[in-house]
Image (cartoon, rainbow over all chains, first blue to last red; front, side, top):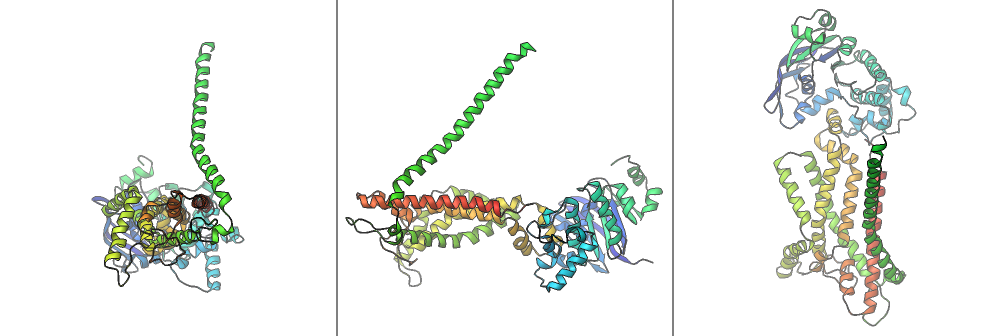
Amino acid sequence: MESTIVRSVDYNAYFGTNHVVKNVNIEIPKNNVIAVMGPSGCGKTTFLRGINRMHELIPGATAKGKIMLDNEDVMEMHPIFVRLKIGMVFQRPNPFPNLSIYDNVIAGYKLNGIKLPKADKDKIVEQSLTKVALWNEVKDQLTKKGTFLSGGQQQRLCIARAVAMEPEVLLFDEPTSALDPISTSTVEELFHDLKKNYTLIIVTHNMQQAARVSDKTAFFYMGELVEYDDTKLMFTNPRDTRTQNYITGRFS
Amino acid sequence: MKASNSPVKFRIGKSGFFKGVIITLAFSCVIPLLFILAYIIKSGITKINWNFFVNVPKPVGEPGGGIANALLGSAMIILVAAIIAIPIGIMGGIFLSENRKSKVAYWARLCIDILQGVPSIVIGIVAYFWLVKPSAFWGFFGWKQGFSAISGSLALAIMMLPIVVRSTEETLKLLPDSLREAGFALGLPFHRVILKVVVPCGVSGILSGVMLSVARIAGETAPLLFTAFGNSYLSTNMGKPMQSLPLLIFNYATSPYNDWHDLAWGASCILLMFVLVLNIFTKIITRRWKVQL
């Protein structure tokens, strides 16, 4: 039996009076890839950003309910500790433009003022970049600026930056929607490797991607978690008609 | 097709005429500057030599003399003004860009815009009433003095403030939110996101705002008239009256003596060069230090 790493209990999120995530209860097993899909504006990104308390950074945004990470409620923890344990990768690659590739990878330590010996830093940089299959491409140009890389490489650099902090969970907010097809497939291959060490939660509005990469899929509609099941079951035999309609492309 | 030929020709002619008007008008903006530059350099450059930089003005009738007191005075007054205004201005700009929609920010922004429009002479009067007059009548902690360089610096700092605030705000506003989010997602606290991510990425814009504000106040005369007041001798005491370039130009250019006119021309030339060089430096810095997003 797989152990649960993230569990949300009656999670609700609001923008002002706008109720965008409604009573979500979900159990996310360790070392799995979970795809969160649904039409635009269904609350999937808001839910994802709720998991590491990024949601509340937006003025007027509030949340209720519990999100348990290893039996600890992240809503009770200080956001900074939450975000150290739950990494995040965004829709658009956002490496720090003022930092080199090397410094971008260890940005989580460097910018937090954590001093590490040079040998440790080198090791973290090499390991993290290897994990995202970027080491061979950039090992000779680590001093160049992070924005010097191509879009796909930048996105992998951002994944490396999140991985370097050794989080337990990695959140991806439509990580490939700004990338070309080749970069997209490189990033998708990464998910298979990364799930050995981390739990991945991926928001996507690309159904094929959800089917390709995920073990389990959650379908959100109008702020509700409509269906949550093994990806294979969900795509072959959805229980809810709304899921079926979405998968067969009857609305989007 | 023949029939449509002539209106097209007419339109091409019209567009050519329009282009010509734009180019002429664009060049006519440059002409006043070129005239000012040419005239001041022509009149001032011959008065400038080594003695001009190291000597203080000689009494009337004696030829020679320099503007060392005004150069040093201007440098000190501007430096102190910058030390007062830059930290406050940058902090204010950060606040405005981070709290775009809050009520406090709205009012602060409005006040700063109004402050930018306040005539410099009015700011001079305010500094006079805040510092010069009280210090002359009652003194501050044993410092009993009327006109002083520090009160001039305060007046100039008030003039710098809105420029620094607004340029910082505009620069930081242009940085994408994804940058801040990248910082927050790595578990950075707010102050580190600002100091380590946002400010370094906007450093070229902030610096150029600072330099432009210095260029702006370097030539301000009105606020210094009843604060720093001017001084014919070399002084390094911020608590006493001090000479500055614009004050020297104002006083000597309106005097009846030719030797003093020469000093004023030379000082104008130097002041103009300083502002010009500062502007060129700003352009270089913005290009060099610009962070590619």
